[in-house]
Image (tube, rainbow, N blue to C red; front, side, top):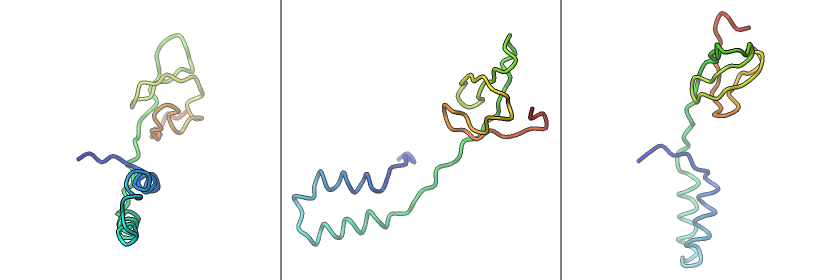
Length: 94
């Protein structure tokens, strides 16, 4: 099974839509309690680096995670706007 992240509220809402009308009140309460008490999973933060495009554009950078090309001053973007990866800084952060 993969580590898919789902919203606890979305699971409750879907359960209510799909099966709640068929269950007795005691079973509804047990399932609600079970879903609410499932352990939470924290998503692993992706990290990457801005790599210079080395083309004709001085301010075009590429995300090492997804390949997204972005025009900006390197020190301005701490996260990739495409995949959300947090950009690791290096000594040449300018």
